[in-house]
Image (cartoon, rainbow, N blue to C red; front, side, top):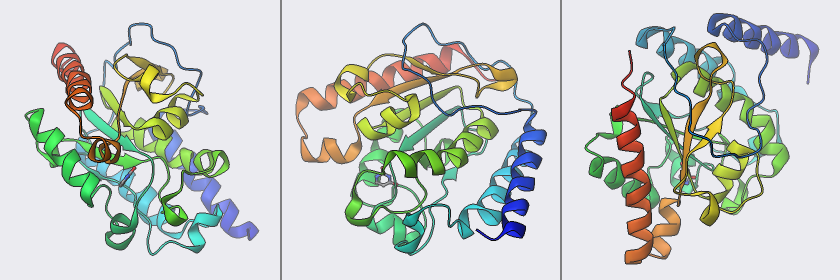
Length: 245
Ligand code: URA
């Protein structure tokens, strides 16, 4: 990458991190399940959060050429929703429809995700939806660890900015990448995990892994639906028990 561009990107990172009052943090750590601690105070207003997110999207993500996924994308898919949402959903990466529209979860899996959100008594615009990688992996393959780590910096800053009370990770790859674990989704789901350092003042953010809506569409059994609903109910209860200040 050209040095001037590298310097501009670095400066932008430093600016956002200064704004958020954070030095340097890893995205994930080994998965654990102690009771999650809760983000107590939000430092930024909703308007400021929107401003930070828009800057990251427009000045960095849209022009990103940090990994090979940029070569095959139609457009980047940054994420959307309430910048001050209590609940953030994190999927794996854009599919074909998302790549065409530049929005996350707008295909068939997205329709089911919308239903899940509505079942929680919320509207899509009440939550924030993003992915681990911002460009569609060819043939919808799972992002490689290098792609996930490279793009993970954007997700880290999205999480820091939004500072949600809880993150729902969708599917095995998103949970593995977010929590930096090799444990499968069947064992991870239904239990609280912690994403360290990304909450206000370096606190942890609670993560509830659940099945990906695309998996549910493929295996739409009573048992799988009940498991996802049970996970989402835990999230609803957690958010109720920990109101945002
Ligand atoms: N699957 C994902 O993981 N993310 C999307 O945005 C769409 C489908």
